[in-house]
Image (cartoon, rainbow, N blue to C red):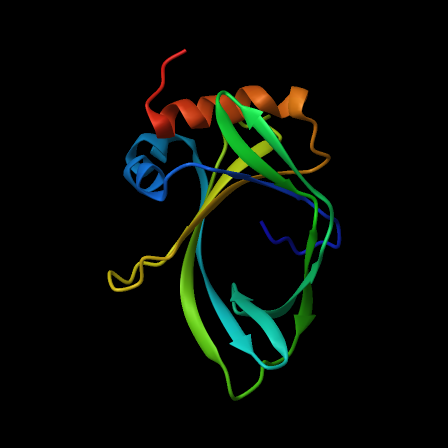
Length: 157
């Protein structure tokens, strides 16, 4: 998840079939904490995002990755940083798409979130999903990830 602040967050990408994630959205509804549309802008000057009528340049800095397994699901832990830098405009020549970013949490105190990014356009099958947290620690975040995996994959504990 991209934030307005200049701190980094860890993204954890579960290797789950996208159709399972797409089919589980109704089950996840009770855990929805934020849903908003952002406009992603792609240009020769980089990637921009328009959110809440503000323009940001998205800056990525690669970080280390590792593979873990949680509840029989393989995941990639990506510690790259993603920052939003305020801008006043984006290049005239660009491509764009509207993305709906939905954020889910198991509880209000949970420090891990599940994010689903999708397009409302039926011709665009874009779907991205990942867990995001500050200061990733598998022991502290594993129970929330397992709860989401169970809902998505239909597993019972």
